[in-house]
Length: 438
Image 1 (tube, rainbow, N blue to C red):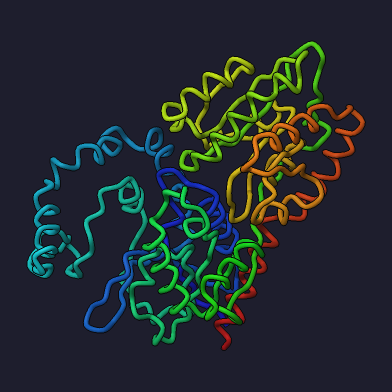
Image 2 (cartoon, one colour):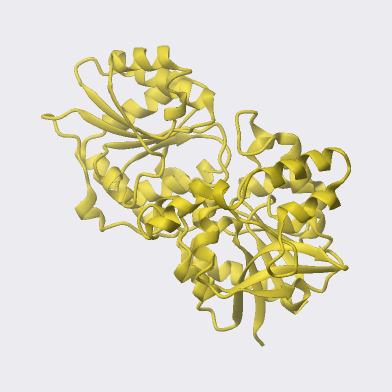
């Protein structure tokens, strides 16, 4: 029996995709060829006369035509007219209807303002989309279908719009994929205000039949905040794209050049970036006769607020700031490093840890949340709140002998090889099949 599955599109294409979006896309691409599943990419759920309607695209066509990184793709693959359209949207859709809707909502006149804000072309009241997503999605045939025609729907996160709809009474069974509960664990996460995030999670827990977590740590967080999720959780670890063979990637620290560090920063965790800068400033004292070159991917938004710490760190080490996504070929950045440092205050999975291990680079990471689960015994751990601990872990990694480094990298690469997208997709497909059979 073929199971009809709908995947909500929010996490399958983003302007700046993160770990959760990359994982959602990788899982969707590996589920699409599964013969027992008929996959659709769905979006824009809307209540119409008691029926939940969605826009549905054939998954294989959608994944071919709509890229994951919309921002990067829109700068190169679209014609000039299409690339400029989002920035000239005010010529086609003036802001006054949107302003009128907001004002009317405050006055309790939402229905009156709705006619100005919504697109009427399909006679269903679908919202006007003014992003790069709409440019690509126009290339894929769309069908308006009732949600009940699908056996299972998967929302990759509690922020999906579907959790605002009363779907718990439909025959369609819902799965919510939970990457992390970071807004509830640290007050430095700007992705969503904690109160709003908690409300969205509560709706997802209420309406989803299964809650799939990216790690055991995330599952424990979910049960701690939402005890009523007990008995409905499952863990599907992420995979990663394997890099080149280890023999081609080993980068030993040569005496004739400085040590090279690749640090993955965070644009919103101010404390994490601050502690990392303090740790880098300590390296001169701990490595007095050695120069260190540091490449920081991400975190550049904190350069101005933490300018004094940046200046202090740059007096001891050479720092280069780059984009957080590491470009189209992140393996090249890993290959050039003697160590990879990732010290967030909290994490839902830790995909960069696996990528660095696979690329043959020793890893220094935080000892919190899911990172010990992902790194296992093959990463060197530090306290992300203690700059001294971070600096000590970096120094211990850089001072490994070539033999120690080779053994460490070989064991870490074998460990990372057990985390594959194929095994993750098989696990998720099994959960979908069991849920559909209930």
